[in-house]
Figure 1 (cartoon, helix red, strand yellow):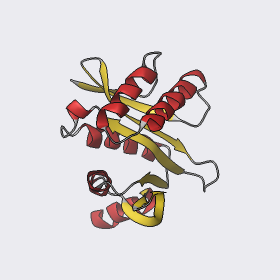
Figure 2: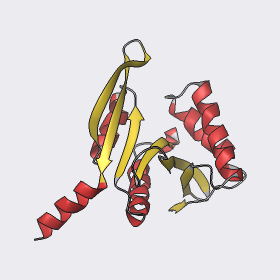
Figure 3: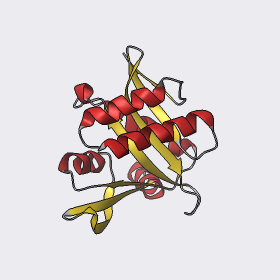
Figure 4: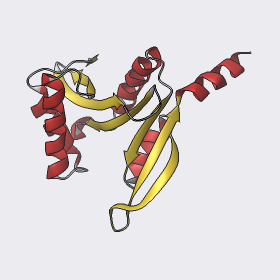
Length: 167
C-alpha cells in the first residue's frame, strides 16, 4: 500500500540518494545535492526545503522536494526535485505524489508553481500531464543542445476555470 508523509527521518537522505541515482537522469553531483538538501531540511525545518515522501511497504519509493520562493510574489512555489525509484516508475506514483503536493499547496493558497527541467521528453510529458504549461526556454542552459524548460502552473487560473465550469 502506498502512503505519504510530509516529514523526513534520519534514513531519508540515503533513501533519497538511492531513488535519485536509480533514475539514471542525474549525475553524481545532482545525487549528492539531493542528499545535502535532505540533510539540511532534516536538521533545519525553516531552511526553505520541504518534502513529501511516498512509501510502499514502509520503504521510500518517491519524493518531491519543494519550497516557497522568497524572492517571488507571495504564494509562489517551486518543485526542486521529484523522483521515483526506477523499479516503481510507470505505476502512477509520480502523479499521486504531485496530487498530494497540489492539495497541500492549495491549502496554503498557493498562486503559482514552477519547475525547471531539461529537454528529456518523458519528464516534460509528465509535467504537461500534471497540468503545467511551458513558459520559457533557456537555450543551452545545462550544456550544448541541452535547454532548460521552465514550466508553470497557475493555481489562481485553475480555480477560476473550475468556478466558471461550475456555473
